[in-house]
Length: 115
Length: 112
Image (tube, rainbow over all chains, first blue to last red; front, side):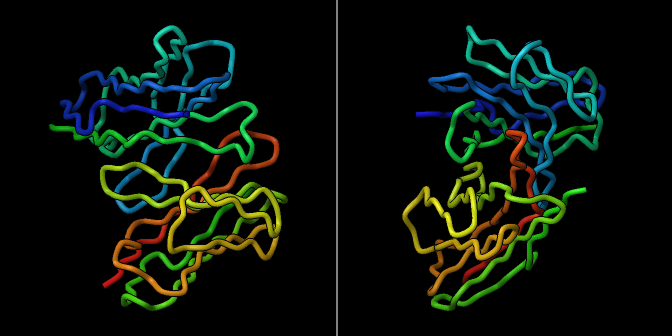
């Protein structure tokens, strides 16, 4: 069965510091991978996605993620965090041939930014 | 451009009362539609999805039901709410040409 693990429930970083949020997935076929961000009380906004090709993908707001098939990982990174990046981040996996194109989400990582 | 609307934004309902949450998508046709529930610290749980009018797939047996009476309308319902139905409900849609889901702003449901 598909699953997504985000090992860190909370992460606190200083403004201006670099950030890496971890995501490991389990999927038996070719995966699609996503990172979404959610501000409190809001819906989810797509940050970036990986379908195929270059394993380093760029997203909005200066985020990037690297797909590593050998490690079943899709970690999210940002070189310099801004206070406005404080939010909850979700990694998700879907299937190329999945009926209904369902996504499986991780439990999320809450990012706190300290000044 | 495409937009997704969910309403209401916030709802407080007594135990045993009925529920109807509505989601509509504009600017597209034949989207896949999804209902998720989000509980604190537990990520998003897929409740229902629909690939077309009248076609509903349920992921988790529960006190809720879903319907798709029109191409771009997805409704989440309950005949009698339970305390455990409290949560944040999110609707999402996927265009037919891309495997990307786009989310509405959500409905905060409190059952008291």
